[in-house]
Length: 117
Image 1 (cartoon, helix red, strand yellow):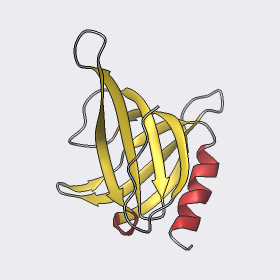
Image 2 (tube, helix red, strand yellow):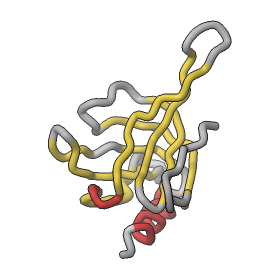
Image 3 (spheres, rainbow, N blue to C red):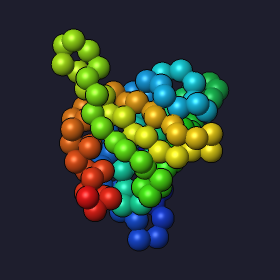
Image 4 (cartoon, rainbow, N blue to C red):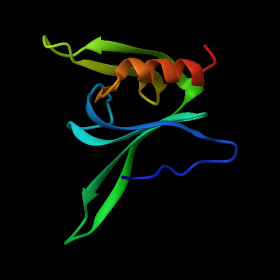
């Protein structure tokens, strides 16, 4: 699992395996990775093969908490699955990436706490 590099006075609040499902103009297909929430930002990294037996980590997005507009849980299937949706102001306007992640409600609560809400 990738480990997010933290800045000064930044602490990791939560980390979890997630699947990016879409909703961001600069990102492509669905991909599995790691979602990080810190006291300053939310970040999604994924690991990919970059040659024979070599793996590299790429950050798909790195959003400062003050850029987040809304965050919520959405129903993802008729079987009760839930997705985490985070809307933020990006370079191309409003972005709304969607993640399949365990305990989406817990993520919403953790984001609210990080934002002081």
